[in-house]
Length: 300
Image (cartoon, rainbow, N blue to C red; front, side):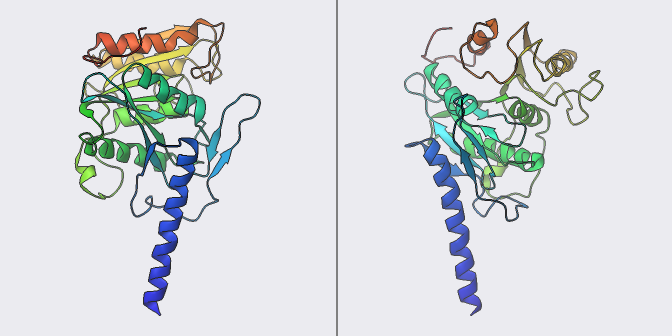
C-alpha cells in the first residue's frame, strides 16, 4: 500500500510540474521552457493554481499564483557564438508578473539586437524570498546550459522592471552563497550577473529615501549597471539615484539616466515621452562596454 501511495504522490507531483510548464508554453509557444526545481521549489506549500490573466484595455497579459518557476529561452539568431544573454525579470509588485510587455516583448527586443533572452517566471504572489531563490537558481542553470544554448557564460546579465528590477538588484548584491540548499551541479556555478539593467526599479531605497534599503550591500564586486527612471514615476526616482550613488562610491562603472516624464510601467510601449528611447540607451551602453562584441543586431 505504501508503494502505491508513493507512486501516486510522484505522479501527482510530475503532473503538477508539467501543468506549470504548460502555462509558460501557452504564453511562449514553441519556446524551450525549463522548470527551475526538479523536485519542486523549496518551501512551497499548496497554493491556488497558476493563473494567466487575459489582457484588459492595456494589452498586458499578467500571470499570478506561480509556485513552479521556469525559465523560457529566446535564442538570438546570427552573430557571434557563443554570445551574450540576459535573464529578464518582469515586474508586478511581487503579486503578478507583467509577462508580455516586461517579458516577451523585451525578450524579442533583445533578440533583435543579437542577444539571447531568458524570461524568468518567478514565484508570486507575496514570496520575495522564493523569488530570490529562483533568480539565483536561474543563473546557475543558464550557465550550465551555456554550451547547449550558445551562450557565453561570462556575458550573462540581468534586466528587470519595477519589482523585477528590485530582484535584479538583489541578485547583483547578494551572490556569495546560495539562499537554498544545493540541488545539483548547476548550483556549483556562479549566480552573479555579469551586468545589470534596472528599469524603473522599486524598493531599493529605505523608507526615508535617504539611503539604500539594508538588504543591498553594494561593493566593488557588484556588476556594472545602467539605471533608467523618470522624475514623475509613482515609484520614487530616489530608488535609482541612491543605488547609482552607492555604485559610484564602490567605483563600479555604471550609468544613470533620469527623464522628466513618462511615469511607471511603460515597458517597451512607444509614447510621446523621451523615456521611450530607453532601449537605445541600454544597447549603446552594452556596446560601448564590450558586452556586444561580435554581435550582429539592430542599430541604436
